[in-house]
Length: 67
Image (cartoon, rainbow, N blue to C red; front, top):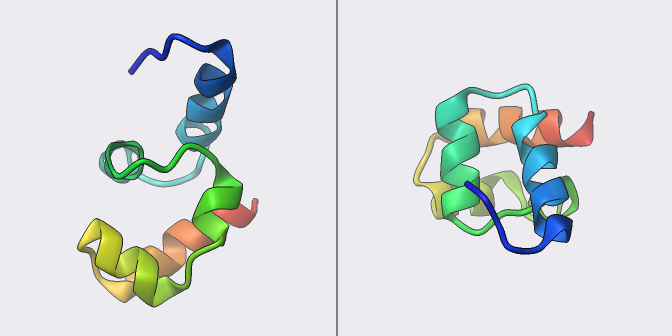
């Protein structure tokens, strides 16, 4: 995914660098997540609900966002 602004491109790369599957990265971007700080502002339950995934997987995403 390419954005017009280089600022957003850098943030997309932040998601791309996370240690989660490509499918989860795509889901995060598709749901509007642009950086790790944004992901970390949600609880496990909220993230699971937004992405329509299991809470365990949401917890893994939150852990990856902390790194």
